[in-house]
Length: 281
Image 1 (cartoon, rainbow, N blue to C red):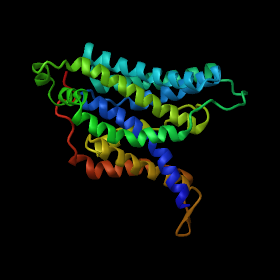
Image 2: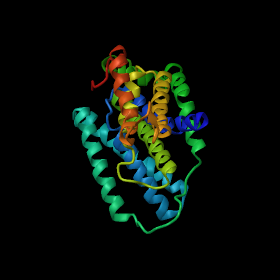
Image 3: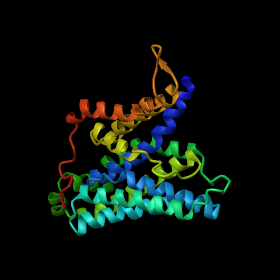
Image 4: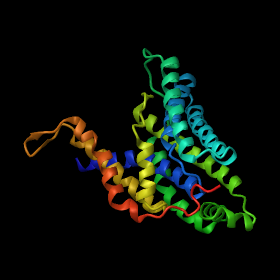
């Protein structure tokens, strides 16, 4: 049971880490991003549909990344060029992803098709996910691109005075966000085997909660994702288990990850500090 719990934690935490690191890059650059869920869901659908249609793991992965990146670029365009409120833009993109993935799944998925989707090994996603927080922690402090990202999210006006253009920096930040959310979605559908409507099941919002809980610091955000991954793995292990002789409905165990998210945010979110320039153009 302990080994199953450990493997489950690593597997379920990995897409959370990938998505949360995408959110980290976006928000450290100054753009509020609540559309992680929509990007992941779009990537799930595109990866599955293109994978079954072409039989190519590279084309399916490219489609997943491209769909998430397209939404990320849309978020950049709406917030930076048209000055739409970032929360409104994120909600709109999430709604678009929910509706579009449902439509394309119903329109192009053959329910009688039997076969496996071409996919990369889960270990490849896991290795990248667990390396990312350390790489980003180093990159934002020790590289020119990282310093520009931090400057754009901390004080865009001062960044401009120093010759940094926050809008351009944020475009590349959104590109990275799309890439990482695309990989997160591809990993989710790889683990499941095929696309299922709304299969992200709120993981994008949990990744956002981890970002807040970790105080916008990559290593701490990664640890928060591990905690949420553990809570999700634990509810899978406990399904069908009685508690002190009382039979617990499966729905109660299924709510454990979301309950853990609420409790963690209620207890620790007030102590974290968002980037000073978050939401400023």
